[in-house]
Length: 448
Ligand code: GLN
Image (cartoon, rainbow, N blue to C red; front, side, top):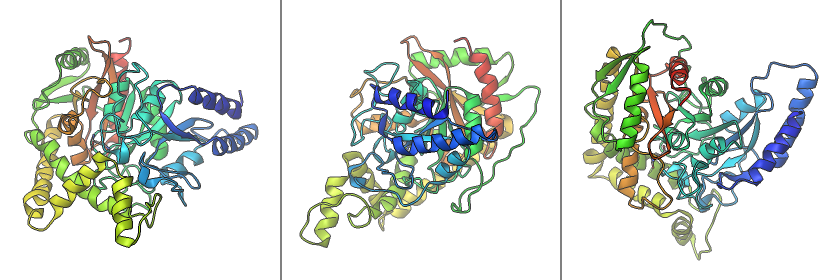
């Protein structure tokens, strides 16, 4: 089959999708790239790592000449004048960018229910959420529409949907993948990463994406060397408790299986209990600043108004959804004079504590393991209280706070028949070691 034929078949599958994973298919762009790759292959070029592979992007990464909306009304009609660095790297490696996927508005959420384009459903059970905020990207891979997709993870938005959909998802070391062209949510936490069905595929696409980019000053080279040890030590943080009984049971079984080949150690991350609280100071603070650029003048949607002030008010009032407004207000409050020291500065100090505690834990353990999420995929509309939704991220947020690489891999199904993810975290820049370890663990879980 030619690349073009394969891409045509892929597009047809996406058009028949019942999960609402995709917001848009880039048919023209995808077919043009297919022809290019077909020509290269016909000429005998076999150097392209992702030759002809369809890749779906979360709707917060920009592509030249295409719309990007963060699933928000406020970006309606915005067309990007440039490519995100991940787009450049993927296409150079021969990948075909097939379309943009649904997400929680501005990546704020854990269920993909706050999109202006409607909810995305979990392909394993259409009455359930796929997780979020990268729910469309996770559902697209889990539903077999594409072999690869990209998401972004600020507090868990790659790992938690991977867990809910029974696939692999990786949040790289902060800076390992360029954020150039990723529409910012919370810049000190945001990180782009891949979804795929197995770790070998994650490894393949991650190696295409990773590396220093001069257009992103926070980007860095990772350590490609892999720690070789007879027995890798897996640390279990005793503070990561509070999972539902079925998730805890599955995790315990998984650890038991590991114990034949890995050493299991208890470690302690005492500040874990503050992670969610400080996340909801730091992330909204950065978001309130980042999202101030959407004013009705520079990008996308503009409301009808009589004057400039009214243009700002009405555009932001009509363009942003409730959750985004809630975060902007929270952040603006935490940053305002008089509260800055009490909330924002204090949160930064606790963030530092979390990082230091990880450093100490990594003196005892090579990787740290936990369930990815305290529970399995919930029903659409089941959780409406924002605080309950926020609490879903207790296990994933700490890695963002410390800038660590982390993956979620499937470890079987719970008694309720739903998959739950197994999270593995590694020291900063040890992404290659993390992937290598996850591949070994995946091998042990196989047959589940
Ligand atoms: N669920 C978290 C939030 O709502 C994390 C989102 C993310 O990682 N983008 O902010």
